[in-house]
Length: 206
Image 1 (cartoon, one colour):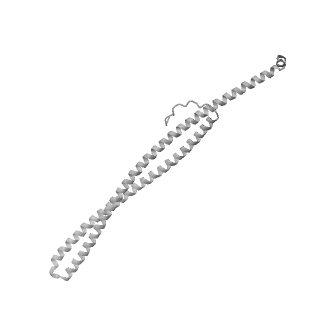
Image 2 (tube, rainbow, N blue to C red):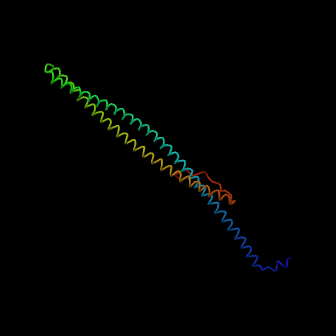
Image 3 (cartoon, rainbow, N blue to C red):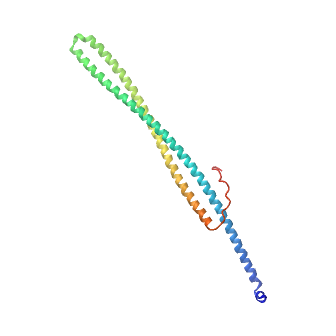
C-alpha cells in the first residue's frame, strides 16, 4: 500500500489540495454572497412594509377628509334648497302683489270716487313690490354664494378622491413589491442557507 501511494506523483497531491481549497473558497464566497443578498432583501421588505403602513395612514386620513367634505357639501345643498324655497316664495308673493296692483289699478279706472283710496293702495302695493324685489335680489345673491360654496366643496371632494385613488394604486404596487421580496426571501431560505441576523428596520427617512 505505501508503494502505491509513493508511486503517485507529488504534483497530483498538490493539484488535488489546490482543487479542494478552491472548492472550499468558492463555497464560502457563495455562502457570504447569499447571506448578504438575504440581508438586503429583508431590509427592502421591512422598508416596503413601512411605506405601505404610511400609505394606509394617508388613505385613512383622506377618507376622513372626504367624509367631512361630504358633510359640508350636504349642508351647503340644504342651505341652497332653503334659499331657493324662500326665493320661490318671494316670487310668488311678487306675482300676487302685482296681480293685486293690477286689480286695484283696474278698480281705480272704474271707480273715480275711490280715486284717492285706490291711489294710496297702489302706492303701498308699489312699495311692497319694491321691498319684495330687494328681498328677491338678496336671496338671489345668497343662492349664488351657496352655489359657489357647493362648487368649491365639490372640487375639494374630487381632489381628495383623486388622491385616494393614487395612494391606493401606490399601495397596490408596494404590496406587489413586498410579495416579490418575500418570495425571494423564501427561495433563499429554501436553499438551506442560514438566515442572517436582521437588525431592527430603519425608520423611514434615514
